[in-house]
Length: 97
Image (cartoon, rainbow, N blue to C red):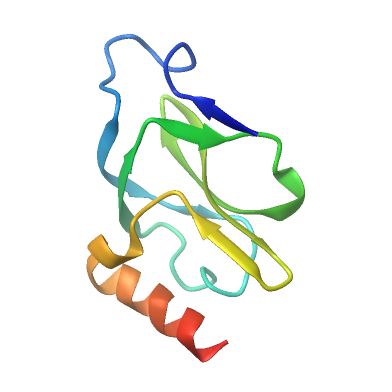
């Protein structure tokens, strides 16, 4: 389920969340080499209840779903195309699948 960040994070934090955050990789084919790397986010919502497909999280006051992966379905909350070399490596892996 997709939920708004408003009411879930501290009131002093800006929404939309815009900026570079580190990935904490849990599992998956696309992100196995980018644990701890920074990627670029622009978002006001995030996914909850996707533990079975959770590939990565980031922190913005609370753990935020950063990526999901299940079978041949991949999704990310961040913008790989704006995430420099890290994003490029993710997109290259995706293209090779």
